[in-house]
View 1 (spheres, helix red, strand yellow):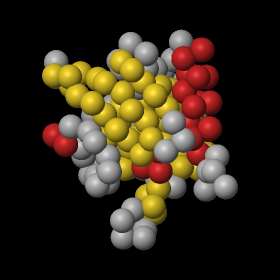
View 2 (cartoon, one colour):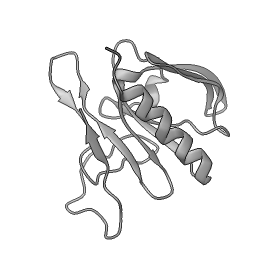
View 3 (cartoon, helix red, strand yellow):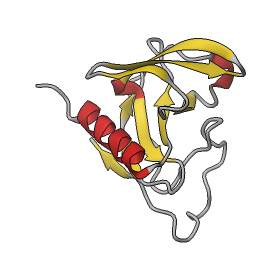
View 4 (cartoon, one colour):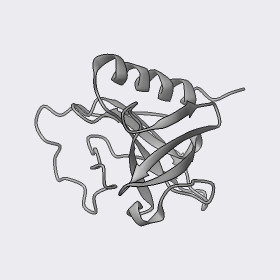
Length: 140
């Protein structure tokens, strides 16, 4: 049976775009993830997948592919859907988090209330989430 994860990712993406928000995806970088490695922090990268930031965006059941510019240099990005740890709106943090299986059999996910910055995941999780900030929901 096909996972529901790619459908949730597409649904949150469409909701963000319909609301005029900027959709971000937090990705756990693995061997099948093609992203500029200089922007990977702590094994993760946060990508703006909004229509203004990407070209030729395809969100399939197995992978997300698009063209984007990083420091002015064009790059073909390939993200396996299994590597997506979260998708959320930059403006208000609303979205959804997922567990991601790492190569070592462990799982990684964005912690409840911890929304990473666009440059990658922060080194230290906040002690308490900022007031009024929404929490992400984990889907297994």
